[in-house]
Length: 213
Ligand code: GAR
Image (tube, rainbow, N blue to C red):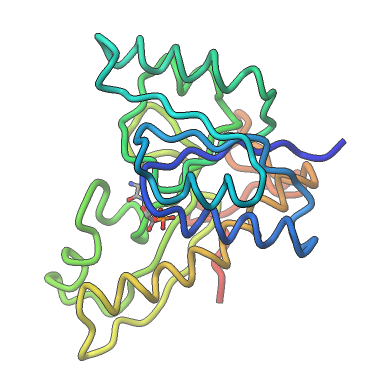
């Protein structure tokens, strides 16, 4: 059976676009069955609609609590029976309720080489620190914000004349390569999280995850 992906977005959805391009070309043997956004104006929604993919908008401001919003997301997403829930620029902190419901199925991409720079403004912080390397990370989501076990990273060299703009563009290019690759491992049932950590082909990955060269 084709692996079913639910993709959660809040913004422009360039990662979503890269995932859809990979499913179209056959590099990723999976189907995006739903795109869910907490913002009705997220650019990624029209990308999905153009591709004929179901979209759902749940506005977090219309719920009394984080848990109530997350429960509504669970109810909506479960109708699509996702095999993997893919966070692709989804800018909401998730409750324990949500994270536990999708334990081992919930994956996030973050624009830094975690554990460096959890949270926001990662490119500016890497530049300010004078880092020679920066990049992106994909990890299983746990209750600790941007703290779940790492699956893969794509490092890149910071250039002397890099700005937040130039650096974020290059990081995003790496994200667009890395996410389809990792999701293909899920589609092939090669990647899982168990009591021994992150397993690829039944072997534990190193702490920093797979490194894309
Ligand atoms: C991506 O760069 C992703 O790493 C980041 O949001 C961007 C979404 O871009 N995610 C986070 O910062 C999560 N903490 P996109 O909407 O164009 O895919």
